[in-house]
Length: 432
Image (cartoon, rainbow, N blue to C red):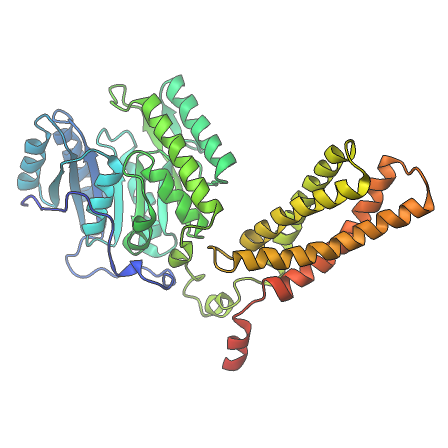
């Protein structure tokens, strides 16, 4: 097969980048002879290992994969004979093609090839084939069936079997701990070089991913998870390559910069993640439910979780301020700060509102609700002060907690009916 020409640095294009959400998941229906899977192998100066690894992967897919496939070698500006080896493989091995990029970056290579591919399932793996290839079919099967949107291999699952040094094991687990604590990531292994994605998802997701290096994987997964897409995890057997050229310190530094950038973008609602959301599925009962994405039970659970965190924040602030100020000033300041945080958290987590639209208005309305809470708690403190001249600190806290419980119920009702109303309800009523 001849070498294909790709753009040098694609940015991710496709009809899916417009407005509107993704359709419900459905099984793939490939046309005759169309490759269902495109496996990309990014390489840099791999003239010795490239040939044996590609032939081994091709033999495995020919023997085990039930659909047509393609292997794409993405040369990342190699300076040795890698381009010549890749071109030779494209000429001599069926279903293999190659492309040359003049700039380095694993993310850049994946973005370029994935954006130009016509296969409905896109995957990649490291050239050293550290992952046992028997995990490849379990990786892509949920994407072909319509069960999931992305799939990743994980080396950190209890069923995984991993052979690698203590330093790399520590770095991997520490990095995933950072992701869980800073970005609330729930996937278990961000950097395993063994991933797949449906093309319709990639068309929407790639334009939002900024990184072109090693952080590309993490950013892709974080955005997909925040958009509510389904990520399938496959435990893998992994044998680390002792000759890997990855620079751990430099890569870790760039990853931390990426964590900060993505975390900041998510915090201010700068990413239009609603473009890559999906309804539940293709069951008629799911379609009926998909019109009510923010049900009362789900809102109550989110509100209670945010309320618990806000109450703990309030009590901590009040206790810290009480020693240097009077109870009224400490209460007002603590309640104001916790109310601002509460409104922002409920806006995003409880009522599912993203972006900056009406954010200032929502905070202003939240302050009105705050004023009602202030009146309740301040009135309770005033009543306590009238009842006793020197109330104990514990008594003050008990009275405030009781008053806050009453204010919490009223706060939920006001947030749901006034601050964050379901604007789609009238349209639904008109359709009945």
